[in-house]
Image 1: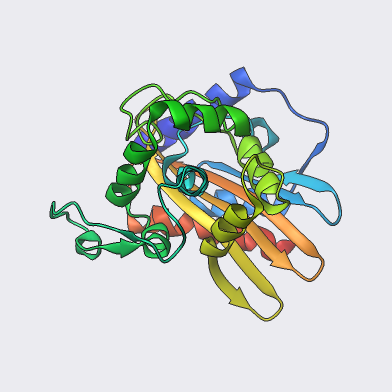
Image 2 (image 1 turned 30 degrees about the vertical axis):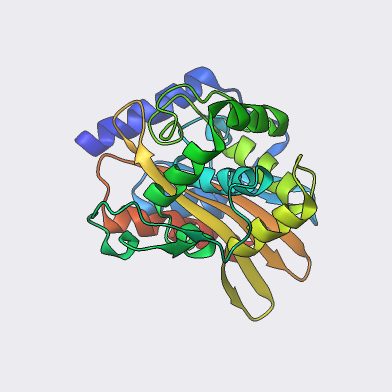
Length: 263
């Protein structure tokens, strides 16, 4: 009952606040993948080679939520741009506070911190960047709703920053094509750190995210692109759950993979 009510609230909110976009195709395999996961949400795809935008539910692609750890893509660029960090092998020192995720209780390279989604290490970087420089960089890149009010080292997890699946793909597309107001070398570093897997003829560059949203539901992201011989296929998957558990964590990737395989 709790899950059903949560699903209805999410979908009702989306329908009330968004309009169907005639340029977005409803992609049945994506809708089936989301339905099979038992978690409400959306998979949004931009197939650049074929100039196709597809979604499991176009009504949800403009539903803006906290970016959670997908913001590490942007904050990595910001740390490089401001000189807070020099490169992927630079060391971010552990603050000495023991945490439940024991793999974070040590110094990490920038690349390791990104791969492990080490929140305390990235909070340290954001504090070093500073609120005013961060706001200027976010405004220049037109990232999400460009609002970083709230705790200066937590605004992407519980503050007022919001981003929608459509905005995620817009940002990723500009990152891919060196069209953000950052140095090309810095964008290349971040793209490289986003590489999570590779196989026969493809690579996936992506980042997950998880936090509790305004309606007390957990929002789970997986955003990035699949690089194939034909070109990049960008994706932004956003699912919701009343509980944060391993099944939900995995569902973000499962529904995305099923959608990409169907293409």
